[in-house]
Length: 321
Image (cartoon, rainbow, N blue to C red; front, top):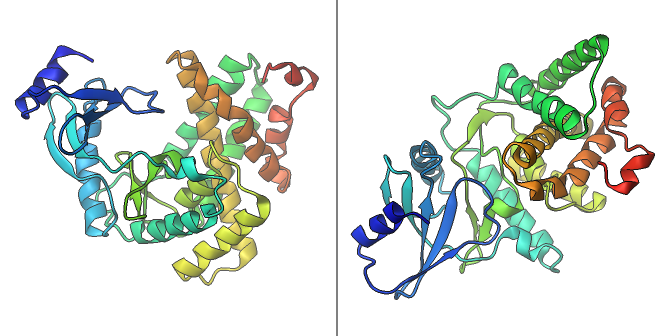
């Protein structure tokens, strides 16, 4: 922790002995600290290496407040330095209670919160358009397939790959759009507070996009694998809460192709964080993410190339994947 951040906390009045604890699970350029030793706990954010995230967090937080979504209350901030001072909403993530007998009930709460969040205003938000989808999916080819696995595609294969990505993006765009999309709505970004409500975190990168993106983030989580029967139950629960009249087959196609979109992005992003960001722990999630792709691709002939590219080979059992 640098002196400027400590000085800012002193400016806020924390001149008594306090203890700053780096919150568990934080591995990126934003550092969250719990401030203990006072009459009430708070959380301080040091985003000095990612200053632009602070105004985004505040702006998106205002949109979510309008939609009545529980988020950590911002007590103070310093935009030019990338600091924020927030209320402490506790230490229990949705991830922490997975496997508990009440897990299904909390996922239902998370879906209800998601449906409500999708009513937040999206005026002038960045759209999740074709160009952005192609850019994100191509991360898999550049960072996971080429940089991490050390494989390459021949010219014709590369052209086929780009054509397939365009097809995936078109399928994702076929579902209802113009919806508030958190873009990382998974078990480690959802807290359970003292009132047993779901509190939404890390929403600063929200965009305007399709209705299934955040549902996919939640139910095909890179950190938690859902039982297939529970997955189907929760998808049906979302459709009912949302009041959708679309057929099951069509909705599942939206959900599946959005799964491919997000999983390709995550494979590439996690490989990049491992290689370029020197954070190898992210690779621990890639087998589950890859399995999501293989499971979905096996259902659709037009995704055959992904099966060929990502089906584990004999040496993968030795840890090369």
